[in-house]
Length: 51
Image 1 (cartoon, rainbow, N blue to C red):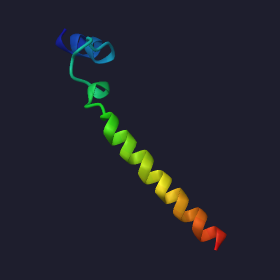
Image 2 (spheres, rainbow, N blue to C red):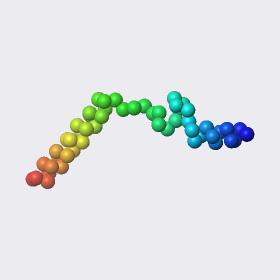
Image 3 (cartoon, rainbow, N blue to C red):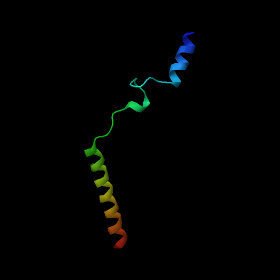
Image 4 (cartoon, helix red, strand yellow):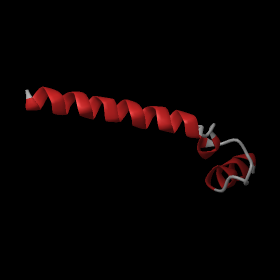
C-alpha cells in the first residue's frame, strides 16, 4: 500500500512541491551577461575569419 502511494505521487507531483522543474530561475542580468559574452565570441570569430 505504501509502495502504491509512492508510485502514484511520483508521477503526479503537487504544485509547489520540490521537484525537478522548481529550481532557481536565472535573473535577467545573468541572461544579458551571457548574451553579451556570446556576442563578443561571435565578433572575435568574425574578425579572425575576415583577417
